Image (cartoon, rainbow, N blue to C red; front, side, top):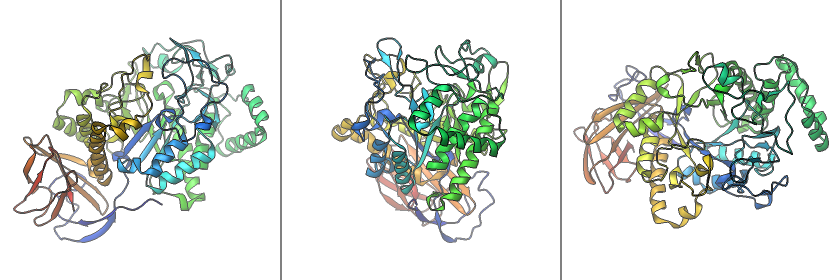
Length: 558
């Protein structure tokens, strides 16, 4: 089980007011030891490409004769599940305040490669599925995944996998197209309305699963042949029979895939799924998927009570390309608006506008706007903010000239924070000689972390903010209120039943002595600590004094 973070909560009347906490506390001071809850809406979610993070087992670097010369950063580079586990055990994620890891798909990829631009491209990124029922040996084994989940959970870190239901991998000389009743290949999406975004292929040679179909289909012959050669055909068919008998679903393509994906929940106890290409699939698919994920998660918890990390529900976050938090619960296709939160499907959606908001808005405008939306239009749901990603060609800071501002805006904004691997170490997103998304996907810069003083300094800043955010749900899931515009101070408050969390943050301050008014947040004579510098101070006449050489303070109850 994860180590519990315990501290004393002093119950007082909150002055950093919000709708959740106002009128729910008394003036009496009551001491109680309360566990810091994990809240998905304020989580630190680290996103990595499984193949590009850390190579923990060089013996699995080559499989299926994937030996053709590739374009730059378009082949397998050696990263694997063991490499992630290694960094979990070393404490890398804990030091960064990470409490959830999202990894790109680990299912078996197409064996062949496609010719795009200069050289071959293999399915190193994980989104070109050949067989949903098994892990690609380049990424590792089932035992490796069991070990990762075990080690991560021991440190209070959840594991989120990536679900692809929309398409198979491309067709190659080694990977024949799936039967016509499974996929369409004749129409490419034009994206100008709802139908032309869903009932079509995303790009050429990416067969689109017929997710709209309720017609029973037989297993693809290539899977039958493969499973028989591997000696597991009878077992796979037996499990499918049991699934369809339990659910009553027709043997339609989407339900096969849902069965295969939810097996990773019941077998390994993963904590969530990031759903790929959500808007390219009918919205009811995700409602159905949520039901099966919830069932599988409940079954895992019932069968493995000793492996249950907490009482949170299964986490589903959706990727709807170009969705932004300002749209609230809806995405507009032009001719149709769809709510992907209700009826129940996603707990959160990836927020594609955060990078623009971060460029255009001041800290206060950004934070107050997000708090308002999350406490109103998205009340009960969440948003997943990011500033760089694996397929966004216009990141906030591609040349990594602003790593401190990037950290401040991402880690101190209301909402869940998606840290893309290398954000915290200023890994360059501009790699000479690459084409397209490959420039975003270089191998993790471990040498720079170990040997470059500038990189170490940047990483330290991310670690301090990340640990503070992990310790205080108020930062990501709480209500925001500005205390002072110049110098800039704000407070966040969060309450869930008997748990109360409050913090004060100051940004772009003068270095040296800082006199901070905390009277709206903390009671007189309370001992406070600046988590950034480590300095402590006692509230006197509603104020504290912090003398540090930094231009930031992260104030918490000591």
